[in-house]
Length: 253
Ligand code: ADP
Ligand code: MG
Image (cartoon, rainbow, N blue to C red; front, side, top):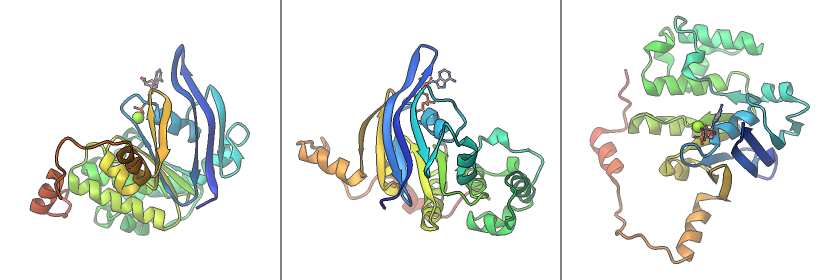
């Protein structure tokens, strides 16, 4: 993993007088799952949306697959996959019709049923978006990011609000997408999620990156600094209890 697919240098975003992103720099390597972690308001979505060409930056440089954002935003759009907010889907079209609509917009031909199979929604092909459960909606919106066969996809808090089963099902989908060769950039404020999914993470707070490394290395550094948990660590947590009792099966149909 040495090929840089995204390079961000000194990125700045001001909203009026407010500096939301304060000169951050990071690289994302091809084929990795890269996490942007941080509390609400840290600047994660702003950063993502600038790279996605959906928001204007105030300063700095963004390169995606060798393309400079300032000169080649349209070329960048062609090689990235962006997740829409749910309001972006026509409520009365079924999933196959929605995929066909996106195919038309991207000028691509793909088989809707294959895509739905990939995200475990084949049985919902004739359902409308608004009839899906929360987890199904998220899996569908992840599916739509893949329609243009992008080099890199952006997922902004994809598991927020999902139950533990749906969350794990989405994790497996994200791993599968990466296995197929797509780079993934994900934002989250769930640390267990980041630890499970991400090869490297940048921790962002008040518009600045305060740490960037593999989850393992960040944990080792903390331990090496003399940190100790105040409570003894058990071999399982409450989520393990919950999943063990209720099973991995999705509860959404
Ligand atoms: P995160 O995704 O990490 O929660 P955001 O990127 O959404 O953070 O927001 C970063 C900061 O910028 C927040 O303080 C937010 O209130 C502010 N902000 C985001 N969008 C706008 C906007 N369109 N106008 C003004 N301030 C904004
Ligand atoms: Mg956000």
